[in-house]
Length: 287
Picture 1: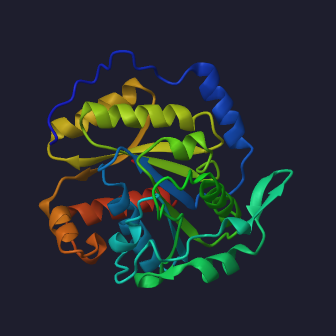
Picture 2: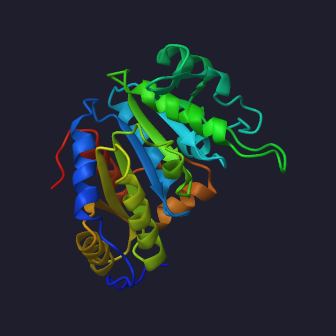
């Protein structure tokens, strides 16, 4: 994997001027703090590992952390270090929690009570809640579950001291359904090859149509300066904000094989994710 990627993408379109201006106007109207961070990207890009590591690091820094597994094939719990729990038998957020209001769906109970009632304990004090998953074939869509997660994210904006990390599925559905509309920052994970970069560009284009204040790119599994420069050039070409690079390391594969959270180890990858968290959680500006 890895390798040099051509930065000229046939048919790729940067975000248009009017669309970008409309996006900025919507963002200026939003006053919520930058504490709801969602992570998205192509399947296998490293979203869950990054989400879990950011959550554990933020909790160790003394912040209340809510980790939301918004993937219908949930794996965030294992990445956090929650073992012995079967996601298929763990109650997800019930759709009955959502009330339809004039200003959009919202929870029927206070946000802290919902997180306490339906969350699972994870290491370092992280609280894990999840979307739910299909338990049988042909049981239908997860539309109501997506609406519930969207309402949860909206209400988490009222919990001023909390940090929310959302592990999104490898699909643009969270954007087409508006599940991620209430996050403050959308972090798109890009590997240094064409298909991963194109996925990021398409997601960024959809996100620009939503009131998400900030959409940023992190390069992941970087093996060389050439890899890093390729992602930077792609971002510059398409008007995307790059906020860092995470190196490739066999330690990530070893940790996954051993079912050991990466956050419980040390190394270049963990340090790079820590620096990324400092920037995105407002403790340190991006260089």
